Length: 166
Ligand SMILES: Cc1cc2nc3c(=O)[nH]c(=O)nc-3n(C[C@H](O)[C@H](O)[C@H](O)COP(=O)(O)O)c2cc1C
Image (cartoon, rainbow, N blue to C red; front, side, top):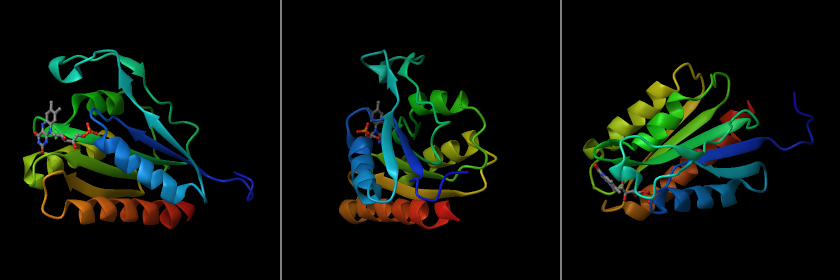
């Protein structure tokens, strides 16, 4: 149990190949910084071109044990969740009991072109969670890209501030 004066810690665990997933994480962090200790903890791999390597080796695989609340974010690659995030989630210890939010980034405008599937995979690989929020899928080329980007951040900010504190 944390002392009431101590801030809860939020781990935003992401993999970002070209910076889009990271950009959302940074905005989310700045929304939450006042109330929480927020860390953007990036998964990194040794391969310079991981999309060309079916097998990847982590150079940093975030340790989630110290975080009270988690947010996972990653891009869609080849109509599904990037294999980097899949591998990372596969090796996680049980995170039951922690509130978790998810978001997905994709290039194509329709969620049926990978986003929906990627989101389902993230939820499935962390199954057992009782408090989670699928905050949304952001398409770079979607007509309402900016609104969606901001909506996902609002959903996650609300989730962390309201439900996570229950
Ligand atoms: C190897 C590769 C495969 C991709 N496949 C898809 C795809 O199937 N569907 C899609 O909508 N976007 C796809 N994209 C686009 C990315 O999902 C999109 O650019 C995303 O915003 C990248 O996030 P990041 O900058 O955090 O890596 C792909 C990108 C890469 C590099």
